[in-house]
Image (tube, rainbow, N blue to C red; front, side):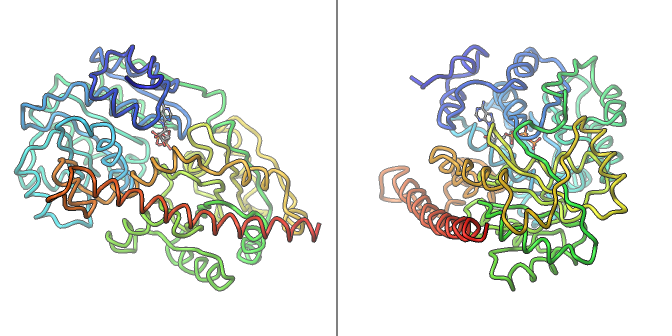
Length: 467
Ligand SMILES: Nc1ncnc2c1ncn2[C@@H]1O[C@H](COP(=O)(O)OP(=O)(O)OP(=O)(O)O)[C@@H](O)[C@H]1O
């Protein structure tokens, strides 16, 4: 019998789903799950809007799993996402939640061999998670059919439209049956998306949770006015004083991402660059390494802004201000997830102050202006507080290790899951080697965390001495 899964049990979810929920230590449904899961289980179309990091993924994955008939080999669930990284992560979440079911999920995105994807599609596939371009490509090749699709999810729909995927999304929707369920989820829901939603959905209730302000109360937000020419120097000083556990630094162009990463490396900081100019293999490897805390600073473009859920991100820094308020919401939402605390810092040039005001009006919250010279000299209180409070628990670290280890897998059949973990089960008790590998990985992570923490403690001591 599970621990305390009262709320999830009340949804009437199948026992093998509840068991997986239990394994993830989800004790009670989050408010968005509480509100949307019953409606989705009833078969209603739903628009779900809730702050970042509040469990929207499980809110659409759980009802979808409940509805899949594993005896059939048709694609019954389709999830479209704006970025490859997010498609991979959702596939990994499905693998976790469907681990006691014979459900086959395939992740389809660009940058991966199309023939290999076609081979997978020739077999049993219940759920497709993908980016619109590659999904459409398979439709054109007739290697995929959505004639029996019962549930369609548009995750981060506003980003898909912003990226110019509207036509692709509409073409894909046109190949799905009229009679199906459509679920649309995001933390931000501009009017354009609502209009699209109303064209494709049947009187969907719009469930909004905690939207007095768009960003989580758990994320402390601050901005500093910095001249363009001083930004890199100030960034280095700032992160040296912040001592984050894991930190994501958002920059607007690929070239600048590389430049800033180099600067951080030259200062002895453990940084890596992530952007769309890298090969798909490298992108996936980097994300896995970051999840496994193999480096501390992820410098990236907006490809990491949407939906990515990495345990232990204590700080987000907008080295460049994003071009719109929605992107700001999603970027800062990479920290302060699942009830944890986080600190989001933005560099704003004097000319960009009106943009900051606009962001404040959209997120319905005022953002504190910090004084950089003070914070870089002595380390500000909120920053060190966040770092100290924010070590991920053993439970959640174990969870994120598993997520990371699986996230490069593109298919979730049991057999392929074993292959993707690099563990052969021949001649040993089933699951034994896998458990051993996971334990080893956890041990390595613990060591890495210890090292980072030692560095942080040392820096904090130095700051105190200086202060
Ligand atoms: N009921 C629950 N109890 C505890 N943790 C949960 C629960 N539901 C989800 N989580 C965890 O909360 C974290 C955030 O969830 P998720 O990634 O689904 O957020 P999200 O709302 O989709 O965020 P974003 O808007 O950034 O995409 C994940 O690590 C997830 O495993």
